[in-house]
Length: 120
Image 1 (cartoon, rainbow, N blue to C red):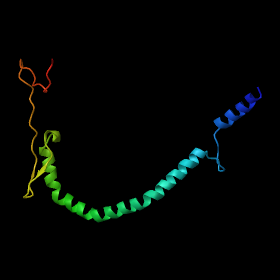
Image 2 (cartoon, helix red, strand yellow):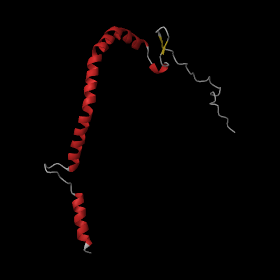
Image 3 (cartoon, rainbow, N blue to C red):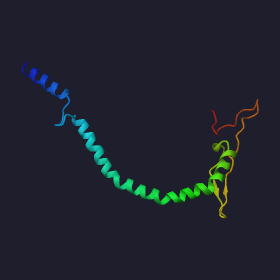
Image 4 (tube, one colour):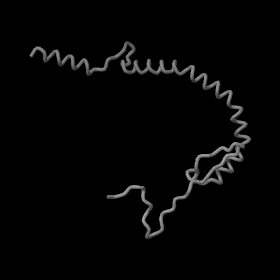
């Protein structure tokens, strides 16, 4: 019976949130430290990405200026991109966009083509 009060006090202490010295909970403090460490780890990669964006910016602007009208025309002509196979680049630099073969439903009264399985 002497263990009951001690168990009740222990359960109460465990259930109460534990606070750091500045009034935040230890979970909040841990999250702050985690994100601070994450930011410090990501800083070099973000700097490198920023430098890459600065290097690529002029080239991407030139590409958009030169290819923009042709891309706009292509997007207007192609209605459904899923109807095409992946592009093929030929040795001379041309790029082919092949339409996928259309699979029409079988005519009425005929069975659908089998999938290679045989029912026994």
